[in-house]
Image 1 (cartoon, rainbow over the protein chains, first blue to last red):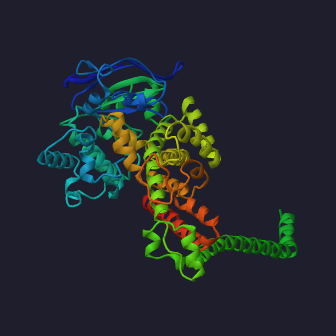
Image 2: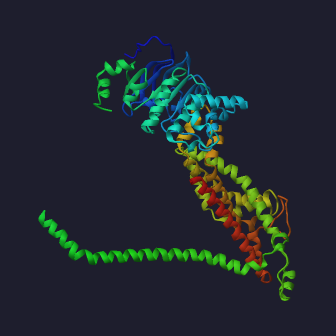
Length: 260
Length: 303
């Protein structure tokens, strides 16, 4: 049931028997096995506390920030186990965007985009920097709005613009995968629509994994969908299939609004 | 239903008016009390500043900031002939700046690092012990700090009263203030910012240096300035560690003067009475300025 029918696209991430516990007998993610397709949007859905955010954070090892975390199993990025890689290298290849826009308040828009390079002490020529900033901001359709105020603080932007700036910051490293943790839950419908259009555009170049609380968002933009419940991956299918013909009664219950 | 309505009407008509005026009166009385007590408190501050200015201003001149304190004989001669006391407190000003400077060099790095450590390990047992010890250190009377530093530094290291001893004593008094203000201003930073930096693959020490410290910069500065203004007026620990010096001194191992030490010295000399007020005015002005600057920085952060 956890197999994905869509075989036309190669996979990039494969999760193998992953379990994550906050305590010896309190597992948030239980024995999840799945493969994430390249250049696709994969949505992770489920009710609160189902482990979807933990699973997402495990993909670039952000979950290790919690104390006493237990991780079993493996996640392979192009056949390389991410738990054997250095977190610094891994997080440059798998970027992350958070629930609330979090641009660095002390940095300008320009500096926020190249913050990844700045914070890692990677030195770039001015022309290289300018190019990365422009392409990243163009990729998130923010360039035209901010090109005349690049040196203003990022916190002056509206919430939706800030979130797109955070996507641009993640894109600046040209990562393989971008993880988004409910990126539109703090935004209004117009800003949400912009982010959704942007994600559909971005999947041409990147692989996107999206945690969402919003079923219609998953239905609108994702190619494949996972449904998680109490830490288990219940169903992982092509989005159309899962919404029109869910196999598991729990998936059906959630999608028809019986719980969640 | 009807009966209870009648009861309410009755209450409104007969009981409330009397009761209501009583409440209003008590409310007014309370407000008047609050205003009166706050006015008393504020007026004390203005009385202090006012009397310092009145008594101290005529000694404040160019010599006050450029010459060392006079000896008692010169002061007496000037006083008997009805002139201003010659000389100033430059040995105290330079000494105070020197002592506070060295104390800051010692206390700021320690304070910031320990504060960051406490913030990063909120639930750690060892961090909890350090936090408790910091509170204890803050409660140690300043004369005790002076005595201990006398024993450690004056007796065993510099073999005499010295700038180093005075600075160590002041640094010990600054430490708990800086530690707690660092921890508190770091706590104001949302976790999401830290996560944003970590998610970009930033090594942890750079998250601290390039994200946490710049973001909380004004909070850290406010804490440091308040600590500095707090120790500028310390007298007791300096008496036991740097003693005082009639001349300007820049040697770490020699005694030095300080403004509060001079005030104490002037107080004990009937010929120097006029200099007490001008020195106190200067000290008060300096501390007040630092306080205002730190308030301004803190206000900038909030806006």
